Length: 177
Length: 186
Image 1: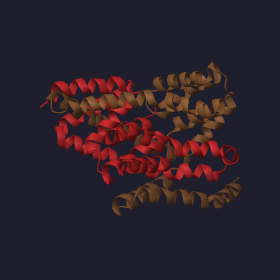
Image 2: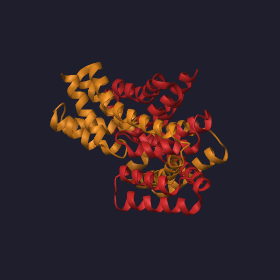
Image 3: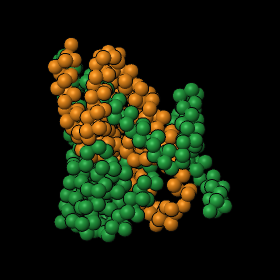
Image 4: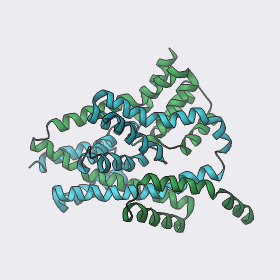
């Protein structure tokens, strides 16, 4: 039963996630936090943060970990399969047909119209994460870490590895109580 | 030997690509087009354009398809393993260790410190998606669709799947009208 749910959660999120890996993050949260209750918002935010600190595609890292946490190695394999297989099978099977249509408005409109919906889902998750952080460490720490990491990541283009690494050290020293 | 080459190509581009799917694409292109010469530049761009129109993670679509083209089923499997496995294993190790020591105050502090950063990362992604919408549809259409999405999902509490399927459906149905408009305008 759990394997079926792992499959379904990842399958849904990835089949509806138009706009690449990041688009699947809020859809995946919808399944594993809201629907199945496997993780709290706090735990899910850890998966997002550490997932971003490591190299490679984000959707498959998250799928693999979620599958592993819920169903061991078999769970991880099932989650990865559900994440990768549907769209890969589509592209292998339909490449010839899709090539003809790739420049038509029809196909372009699909991603275009879904994008604002994904933006809303991402925005809601952003608020969830900050609310969780506010409840855990208060507004001052949340603001300090938030603003510093925003500057580091976006303004000075520091790699997420160092930002997350720095945050882990900061947390161990100042937030450990 | 081919499967091994495919594995190495996608392992390298996966491990060096920080920041999610798209950042690995230029690295992947270098391996596929320049290092191993499995296809030319145009063909790679075509596959990328097409992969973008399908849902799901972009990297595995690209690597899986290229692996399939170059080395059949085993090529596809090598490409996927190279792209996915190393980083999944790393994340599982990291998070499992973190969870195992959660009762230690300093580990608990570490886990608390990353939440605001996850918030920042998602906030940035949110803004990216809004900007991309604006550049393809303009502000009016973007804002209307944002409001519709908020009402449907947050106020009415309808599952995102239903909204997305509805949007995909309307993209397919409104095709003719828009093309007519463009013809008239030009």
